[in-house]
Image 1 (tube, one colour):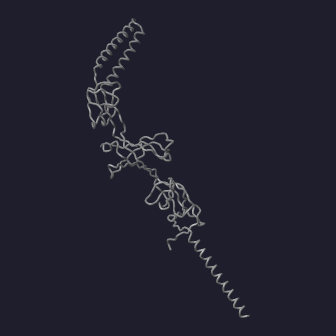
Image 2 (cartoon, rainbow, N blue to C red; image 1 turned 135 degrees about the vertical axis):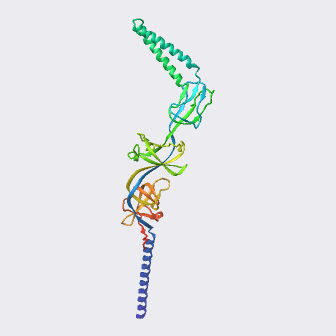
Length: 345
C-alpha cells in the first residue's frame, strides 16, 4: 500500500513538472512571436545644410514688342515695300495706300490757311472781327488734323525696329480686319514666367537669370529681369516676371521653348533621402516616418523643396538631427512600435 501511494505521488510530481515545462515553452513562444511581429525598419539620421534656392520655370520666347501695321480707315493698298523676313528700321516706310484724296485735302488745307491769314491781317489793322479769326482758326486746325491723319494712313511706317513676321495682303487689295503687316522687335526678346508669391521679395529688377533653349542644348543664355508685375494672382498664388534676352545675332526666335533658372541664394534646410518619402495615395501629400526614443514612429506630413541627386530639401515637417525611416514603411502607421535594423551588425 505504501509503495502504491509513493508511486502515485511520483507520477503527480512528474505531471506538474511536465505542465510547468509546457507553460514555460508556451510563454517563450508567445514572447518570440510578439517580438517577431514588430515591423522591422532601417533608420537614417538627417541634418540641415545650406541648400541653393533655385527656381526653375518653363516659358515660350516672345518678341519684345509686336506692332500690327494697318490703316484706321478702309483703303486700297497701292504697294507693300517689305516682305516676311525683311528687317526694318524704326520710321521706315513699309506700305503705301491709295492717295487720291490726299491732294484734295492738301488744297483745302492751303485755302483755309490763306483765308485765316487774310482775316488775321485784316483784324490787326482794325477791320474784321475776333469771331471771324477764331472761326477760321478752328477750321484750319480741323483741316490740318484731317490732312495729317490721311497722310499717316496712306504712307505707313514702322514704329519699331524689327522683322516682318506676317503679311496678310497684296497690292490692289482693300484693307480689312487683319493688319497689313506684323512687325516684331526681336532684339531683345523676352520670356514671361509665373513665380510663386513666396519668392516675391527675392526677385529684383535687373537680376540675372540663366536661360536654356532646347534648340541650343549645350549653351546657356543670360537673361535680365525687366519687369515685375505688381500683383499676385489669387487663384495660382503667383506673380508675373518678364525677362529679356539680348539677341543681336537673331539666334533666339519667338516661339522657342525656354527653361528659366533663378538663383535666390542659399537657405539652411534639412535634407532627407528620397527613400524616406511616402506618397499618400489619391493625393499629392507626402509624408515621412520619424523614429522616437520610445521605439515608436510618427507619421509627419512634409513640404519638399528641391531634389538634389537622391535627396530632397525639406521646407517643413522634419526637425534637424531627426531619425527617419528609409525602409520598411509598408507595415507602419502613426504611433506604431518598431524593431530597428542595425546595419552595422
